[in-house]
Structures are given as C-alpha cells and as structure tokens.
Length: 548
Image (cartoon, rainbow, N blue to C red; front, side, top):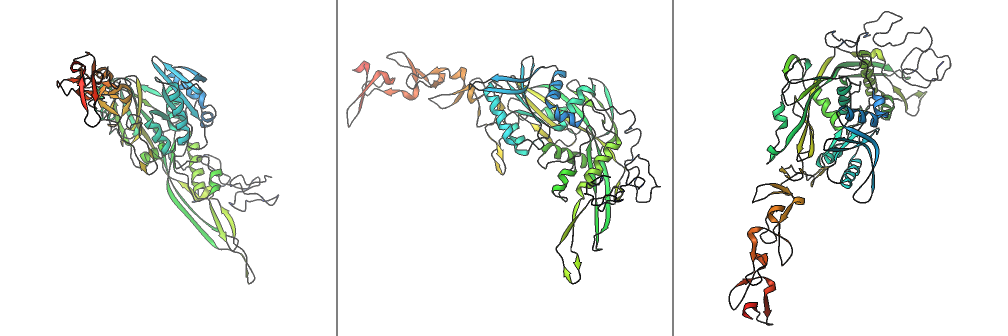
C-alpha cells in the first residue's frame, strides 16, 4: 500500500485506505480510478468523462509513425554543451569544448564552446539554470568577450531563456541569445528537419501567413545600410498546439460546506518537446512549483512572445510558398505524441486550479481555529476540447558588416521582433524604468560596429562613417574625420590635425594648426608659437624671429 496518493501526493493516514481523502482516487486493486485518454476503463464512461480529449485529424497529426526525438528535454538540459557543440558542427563549424583562452588583460577565460568557420570566431557560453538567465551572467560574458579582443562573436545559450534586462543588455552588446525554443529548433533542423531549397514550392497546412517578407525583415534603417550584407537567412516553421479546456468541480469540506471551482482557457504546448508556454498560474502558491513540470517564469521573454503569437493569430488551412534565392525554409514536424500533449495540458490545468480550501470546524458552541485542506482537481473534472495545430513562421537573419556578425529574429506573421543585435547602440542601455536606449545610425566602415549618432560620425572629406576608435577629431576646427583625413599632427599641441587646418610657418617651414597661429606686432606675419617671442609685463608685445 503506498504512503502517498499517486494522483495528488497527499500523505495517507490509514494503511488500508481504499480512497484518497483529498481527490478520491482509488488506492486498492480493483477500485476504479481516473484514467487518461487511450487507457482501458474498468467501467463504462459517464457523461462527465472525456475519454478522448484531443480530437486530432489523421491528416493534421497522427500519433502512429511519429519520429521520437533524437534528444528529449531532459537530455537537452543535462547535455547542453554537447548538443550546442553538435549543432555548430552540423552547420559547418570546427568546434572545441572547455577551452581556456588567454585574454588581453592577462586573465585566462574559460569558454564552453569555441566554433570557427572561415574568418568567423564564435565564443559560446552555455547555462543550464533552472530559471531564466539574468543580466549578471550576460555582463560577465560580455567582459570575457572584451578581454578576448577584436574578431570574436558572442553567443549565449540558456536552457530556460532570459530575463528582459538580460535580453536588452545582450542586444546592446551584439551578443546572440539562444533560448530553449531556439536550441530545440536548431537541433531538430539539423537532425530531423526538412530543409527546402531555392525554387521549390512548399505547401503548408495550419500555418500562420507570411506578412513580414524577406525584404521587410532584411531592410535596416541605417545611413550606410547598403554596406551591410545578409550572410544567411532562414524561415523556420515551428509547430505548437492550442488545447481549449474547461474545468468545473464542487467539493464539501468536513463541515459540509460546499465549495465550487471553475476555470476555462487554452493551453499552448510546444510540439517539439511538450513544454507548456502559458504563464505559471499563481492560484496554488508554492505547491504549484513542485507539482507542475511545465513551470514558466514570467521573465522568459521569448516564451511569452511566442505564446502571444500563437494565441492572437489564426492559421490558414493551406497555402503555398515559393522559396526565393536569398533564404532557406525549414519545416519542423511534431515530435511528441498525443498522449504527451494531453498529459502536459492536464498537469498545467491541475496545477493552475490547485487551491487551499479553508474551513472553520465547530464543536458545540465553541468555534475552533481555521483549518486548511488542499483541493486538487480530479482528471474527471477537466475536459479537453478539439485542439488546433499552429505552425509559427520565424525569420532568423545574420548580417555581416565588415566582418562583424549581427543577428535578427522576427515572427514572420506579426512582425514581432524577438532579437535584433544591430538595432541599439552599445554605449546606451535600458534598465528597468530608466530608458537610455538609442537606436543605431550607421555601422563603422572599418570595424563594422553599429552606433547611434552620438558615437559615430561621417568624415566630411570621404563620407565614410567611422566610430570613435577609428576617427580623429581635428584639434583646430573640432570636426571629426576618419583617421586617413586627420592624419596630420599639430606641432604645437601634438594632437590630430586635418589638412584644411594645417598651415606652414613662414619662418621654420614646419606645419602647425591654424588655431595656434600668432601675429607679429611688427610685421603682421602669422607664425607658429616656436618662432615668436612675447615680451612686456603690462603691455605684451609679440615679435617674430625675422623682426628680432
């Protein structure tokens, strides 16, 4: 005889108990208990039962023949570095794991995965946290990248996604973020996904329409956008399912008072790994965290945006798309069974509606202290209705600006931007209610880094946009030039000088800045400070060497 109820986990006080005192589950052999869809019942179903809660059509999704995932969600979490390493190898990179790299500051940095392909060098950080990765971890990784020096691209992989501040900071530092869904998509794309090629006509069913096309998502609002190339582009169709439900129950507490419970809504489930996208319910308090394996943090930015995309859009029954020459399309197929979908939905609904039931027993004329009993929904109180598969299209674009790689992810139906590492200047950042975020104006035409108008300038001579690391400010006129057109050095202050502000001293024939010119009081000639003498205490007199 078990010590705990197998349905709700309530401790059992009596050794030979036949029913759980909380949820009513049968505990002895031969006692009917709630059953899931597809299981054999010991009694005919009643009107309150829902033996087949998910009404799949054979054309849309069939449980038979479903390819079992090459890696499940548990393996993805425990073998995250190994999976990431395999993904980049499949994409043509040569990889190394757990590499200790010396930095410019004399420190040794341990990088989880290093991926190299042609001129690309990618440093990848992997974090398998039980909650969303916060800003501290992104800042630490950003410092590692700075210490490694130029030529390194950063990718941060988090099994449980990122907080909003972490996402914002990563974007401003051009660090690509790969959350749970991104890793699942990449893994199944290289292991089981169907990649369509140029000119192929693809027919899609139950997919959201494409409203943001390739041209829309690759157009950048930069002054020199013509110099930024699209290095690769992919349109991925990710399968999800919407499971409508209704829950209704009534329970008497020990004082015979009737408690009524009801709820309805829709559960959104990822069909690659069976993960629930809904926000974790708050009704059941801390008990929910231990009960529901589909826990979602309100800080998981991409998960919440994906949930909104699925819930707020209706798929087209069928449409066709012809693949252009500029991008690939990957159509991912469902990897979980119908029973797994039902189990995930029931678990979430049960957790959402688990509540503390308070009652006050009375003994004679004396009112005793308030007591509590936890209410856990029974399977028979939950009805699952006909579900709808939704394939969500998402663009993943990589831009190349003079060797610097940027990432942009956009939902192709709504146009919602999930990530855009070229959009915001790295010299500004938004934290909480303080908004100092500024959009980029152009990319530096030397290093490829994108900056806002405060931190990038256009050379007035050649028209090139240059950042402060590759620009010089003329010490005479104060204008900003590229290093090529402010290559002179003022003899007086030893600071950069543009050609327009450079003059030659008529006495020593050496160049100097026009702002340092001094006028001889005798002959009126403009000479450099080295060729003039100042005399007098009250009334100063300047005399050049020729007039001395």
